[in-house]
Figure 1 (cartoon, rainbow, N blue to C red):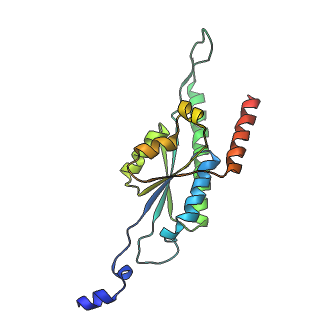
Figure 2 (tube, one colour; figure 1 turned 30 degrees about the vertical axis):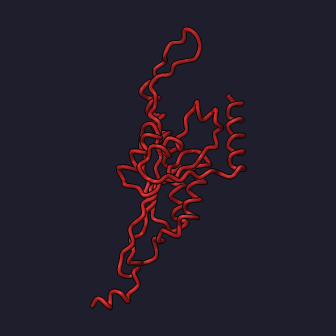
Figure 3 (cartoon, rainbow, N blue to C red; figure 1 turned 180 degrees about the horizontal axis):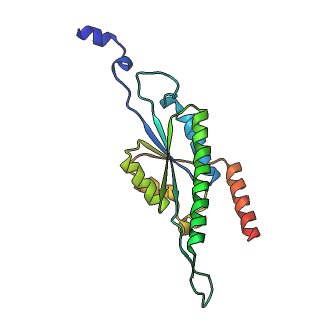
Length: 198
């Protein structure tokens, strides 16, 4: 009996552990590049959803964290008073956020579906860096994948970096995917155009 177990390949005897990968998604091209990179390079460890197998298929969780809507606006400058949003404005902003979240996750889920990878989506509300770290711990994620916006040292010091924070505080391994220079230049030129329009 023991001889039969030894002769069988180890892979057939054991069922491989299911690997849970979480990818953080936001509006940036960098986060979608990180998802694409994860699907292209980590796919070897993941069983496609249409292949019957004794092994449990791995799962990618797509997480998007939206910042809570502030019901008031404090204008910059001396003597400015706070303006409070009416309930109809608050509702309209929430609807727009929900549509934006749905579009982002739909695009990300389609990328997974195209690669035949099982994926689920999760929308959280709060501070992105804290919520992402909490979610990785609660869901017992094996790997967190984040995109990098390519902030310089000064901007990162003032604005903070979600990827930097998660690298130091997440309870699982963190993979930060830096986008190619073309994407970084494209994103920075879009933000310059956006600032010029204001």
